[in-house]
Amino acid sequence: MNVKRLPAITRSTAAAGHEIGNHSYSHPALYLRSRRFILGELSAAQSVIADTTGIAPSLFRAPFGARWFGLREAQRQLNLVGVMWTVLGLDWKLTADRIASRILSRTENGAIICLHDGRGVRANPDIGPTLEAVERIIPVLQSRGYIFETVSQILCPNN
Image (cartoon, rainbow, N blue to C red; front, side, top):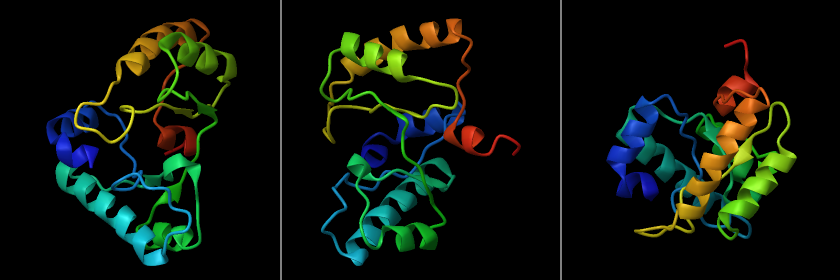
């Protein structure tokens, strides 16, 4: 839904070299859902992302990290690799200080950091705490010798 709502931002994000993955269309919890519902959510997201950016995602992260029967088959049909996080910022509910502290204390080599583009699927999400935390996190991690890569670069370093 966010890609459909903000196509110009999505295109500029992709053009800047950022990897855009599938996270479902409307961000529902996928447990207690039918296989058909799950496939529909992933397919709708896949379509809107591909139509907007010209690139079909190859990665999928389940909303809330919740996986359910039928998800693996939907991923197979859409050629999506499931990916989870190793560091969760809890940025939808914490202050910038706490987000930054949480990320910096848990990040290790090869970490996949999970942050969000807002606090919910809303027209004007509050992304202030996340942005403020990222402004603090990046210089510290760089000073520790970390570099930033896409998830695909981390998972398939020789491609």
